[in-house]
Image (cartoon, rainbow, N blue to C red; front, top):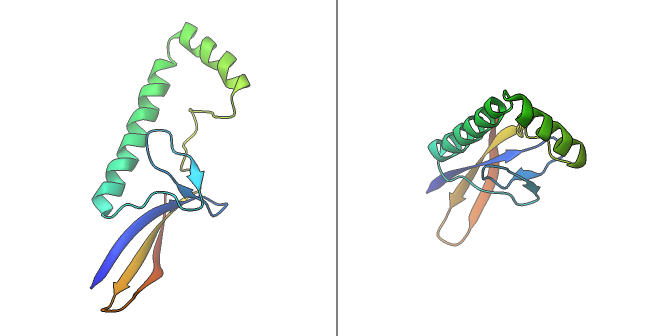
Length: 107
C-alpha cells in the first residue's frame, strides 16, 4: 500500500506546525490529504486578509506599528513566503515501511 503525506518546509529546512500562526520545528505537522493542506493554506490567506483589513483603521494601524517594533513576529508578512510543499510517499510492506521524498511544490 502507498500513502502520500504532505509537509510545508521553509528555506532553513524546518517544517510548519500548522495553525493560524504557524511556527517551525524539525518535525512539523503532517497533512494526510492534499485537500487538508489546501484548507490550511486557505485559513492562512483568510486570517492574513482579515488582519490587513483591520489595519485600514488609522488608530489600529498606529497601535499595530507600535507593537510590531517590540515583536519578532510581523503578521503582515506571508508566513509561507519562500517555502515549499513536500510530498512524502510511504510504501508499506508486511514487515516494514519506507518513506521517500516525492514532488516538491513551491508556495
